[in-house]
Image (cartoon, rainbow, N blue to C red; front, side, top):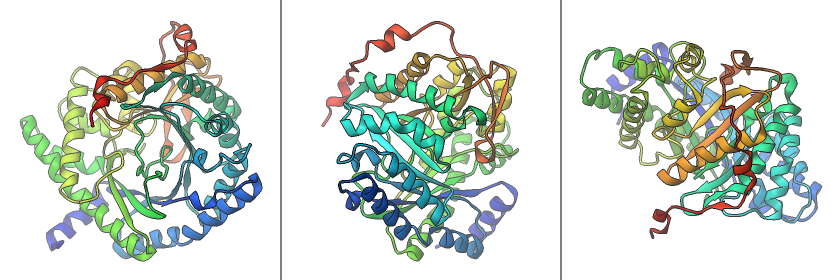
Length: 450
């Protein structure tokens, strides 16, 4: 039972501390669409999405109005497209159909133009991956992902090499928009099947016909809570974050169950992720600085982030029996004003960001690098991040933008929640020979646990 004090606290968090529901995401299974013929498959996909998600935006707006909780995005995720395109030679009609369907139902993004190739690539997988640059450059709300590694399978280095080339091609195809297409493409290790956050959302093969999940954010709320305990020991900091995460998750639980009831689809999960925005007062970096760091990225940043990520999860699981997704703290460079300022000052580098991904949710996210960065270097960045995920049994990801025509110190603008970012340097030394070997990096020994 939610009492009066909780209601008043929640209203204060929404009004003063930028608490919001970042997304309501409906997952839609496409397995019943499988058939031969590109155009027939595309039409069935379109019909399935528009039928299942027809009321998603309307219900989201009703909940916003009835409960006073801001819902920033409404989204759809679908079955990984490579799993349903095996009988067709060209997956692009499906990409176009998904984009049209998303626009028809009024969502902000639709995700699931996805291939799962951690151990090997089928012909359908490879065709889909090679089509990603064209698919994302000619659509506007479609998002894509590829899972190239897992703790049980190791790292598919052939897929890693291909994904580096995809990123470069996609950047060039959207050069007039600073490589914006790359912001809609993410490469994973240990991807989860119930992630409501783009660009990596897809609806896993182990899910039912449909479900509705919610992603909750609240960096501003956590920072305000820590401002009240300046100088307190770090164990008290952890307890404060846990209590705050509990309150934030309660809001997500309420919205998710209400959306499930009104849409008449099962409740999936609440993803409690401290996902920042470019707005002042909504920064994960500022939370770390509130703990006592002069600037995010300095020594101690990884330890502070580890504390934050763990405390967020501990608080969240006490507030909902169905916490899932990528719950924890995100550190997307372009979407966090504190991260942006830290990178501009030189305190936050690509190497430090990589170190911090060992203890946070996901990985190297929305990072702009020079436009002349070789595809092999991008593949090597992906491989490094995949290795962290594989060895540590966690989800990691890479979403980098080699900004065409831009160099270190330049700025790239993406707009909206994607924000803007300074272009930061990569190492000048080549990884080409390493990437060209291909093959597979074997799984670590702990993958044999049963």
